[in-house]
Image (cartoon, protein in one colour):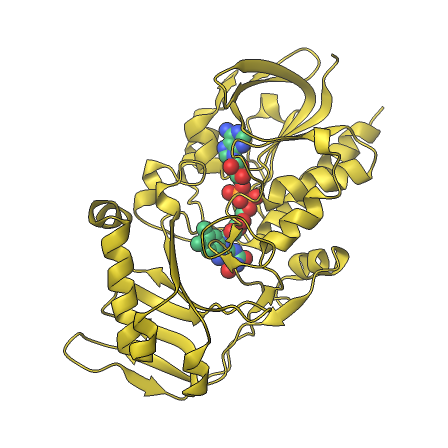
Length: 367
Ligand SMILES: Cc1cc2nc3c(=O)[nH]c(=O)nc-3n(C[C@H](O)[C@H](O)[C@H](O)COP(=O)(O)OP(=O)(O)OC[C@H]3O[C@@H](n4cnc5c(N)ncnc54)[C@H](O)[C@@H]3O)c2cc1C
């Protein structure tokens, strides 16, 4: 075969947005995704942890349409419904273990966080639905990219242990730059300064873990509580109402325990400690969730590298030079972390993808 016009590495939000924009312009594009599912850091599951059309967001849950026009446009273009994060009611604050958690009426109005009905995974499904099925390769991991006379050659490994070479004219690398540097080799190699930039760009939220407790009803709301809590004791540092738009009741929290400690404590102990903390904040009913979920992103090798075990800084927008000069015409980075406007966020993934697609289209228009 002659090869694809564009190969997109990564089927997260950035990869799917870039692929959809190129496909809509009549370009032959393929999405190559290492996992057995699309979405990357977007992961919406049912209470058993299986991907769901109406579930809990173990990855991102919020967007802020007033501040993030790219994300607001995507939600509108895909005809997705959104709803406001529940914040009605008092919040709980736990300062130290020897004090009872205190309840407060919130005084400050924050920018309203919005959620997508059905979960953020609805955006992934809608985008994937716009691409031909045979142009999405799951369980296919890119391990090397080589410049050729006519473009690039991608070495891929499939789940079954097989490997293949896929030729393409252009490649869009829609994954975190730090992960790209750690897991994909380039021939010729990227300049040391470019490789160092990729390595030092933190992958947003990669060091974190999210815990969910699912209940039969959002009992905290009846007690006048928003489901929002902050704790300086832990194990969770920040808790929110995660009830779905269809009414499945849940609370979720970000763990304050570091990645290494999480790994040594193990999932069962962590879950028990989280449930106990919810009991302290929301009363005895919180002690009996009907299901719990824990997703540790630092332990996921298709999101985090060893460098993500600590830290967690926000990537900063920087120069547009993400690849070495000799790769300039063939390789474009499009993971959220490379966004000029909202690096690390969902909105950044959309913006970086739109920029990558526009660059390829302008290349193709050149005589
Ligand atoms: C816990 C958590 C909470 C978050 N909360 C929010 C929030 O509320 N709001 C917000 O705006 N953002 C939030 N984010 C950030 C948001 O999830 C990301 O900005 C966005 O999903 C990034 O999309 P992406 O496509 O750039 O990267 P990713 O989603 O990381 O996609 C990269 C894809 O590449 C694939 N891949 C990796 N290596 C290879 C390879 N070698 N070959 C083929 N495929 C490969 C991966 O499997 C993955 O599917 C959160 C993230 C996490 C983890």
